[in-house]
Length: 423
Image 1 (cartoon, rainbow, N blue to C red):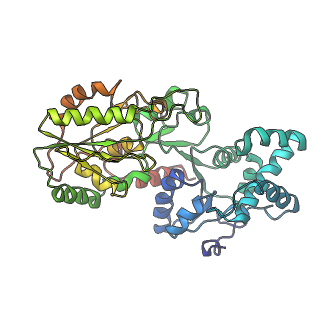
Image 2: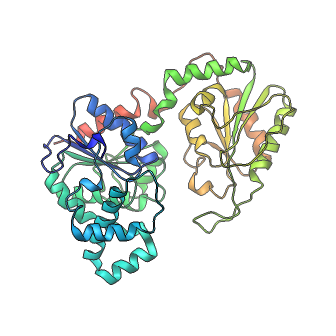
Image 3: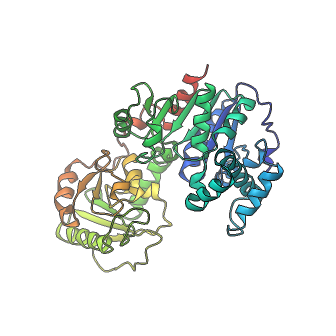
């Protein structure tokens, strides 16, 4: 058991404790800086780490608990359900088996209690973990824990259940949306789902308002996970990288952040063109060859198997191991199809052009969200690049900060939102 568990009493927490609930990946990356800031300020925090979130929090020395610390985790039926369901999972993953058993067992028992054995088995067979929504489990635990507030992201299942349970009990809550929330707006757009909804930018805020949320409920805070992009360290690293590569101040450096384009979307009935990344690269190479004032940097996605073609003047290669934050502050503009590099470039203050012809464009609608200038095909890039180029700032060390990153950063904005709802 992690030493992070030792000092947390989940059954007798004082009223002042703030409860964070998060899955791993980008979700815990969004909430971890907020929890750490509150801990550093002396605010008691309980962090329920779901699946791989524990690894992230342990690395940051943020105390956490897991499903195995929740009431009922050691019950005989929970353990039986959990062990049975865990048999089908591969061994040796980042999540401890005891945590996996408790997570599966507690969720499945609630499924059984709500639908009966036969229907629960059918639901799990057809939906897997997507069938889980343990609102009763969280309502019971929260009534015992008595947190001052509940903070979770836009994830379904346990995070969703925690916020729904908080609403039932009248506990103040915040839902933090990590990127766009295009699918999650179906439930986050409902009245009362979180007293406050923290979002990336004004375009996302307007989307939630159009789904019925009140003006005072949705707040632009930005995402704390991206705050590293606006640090002085990242800016200085970018200037150093530009100097190291001898990219002139009179050059306009374009970053092409490539990614795989499959023939079919992995989850939706949409078809892609696998030649799109290479066609886009070819257009950008041709553009640079025809315009001496520009330079191209090509960065392939780690899963792409592409050999960089050398020999062309003013075309450089950036390995995926190179620090992205520094690179974004070294270049002048960024071209993507639907890579998350487009979002990060926008938050770093770089103009972004998106080729809105990807199978993933509906999942990352950068142009409609105000993050990029969208073009319909690689052949349209030349006009867009020439239009944007005069607006690109000189590398003088001073950079414009987006409104949602100004004044104070996303972390402190979220802290203030949490403090504002405490009663």
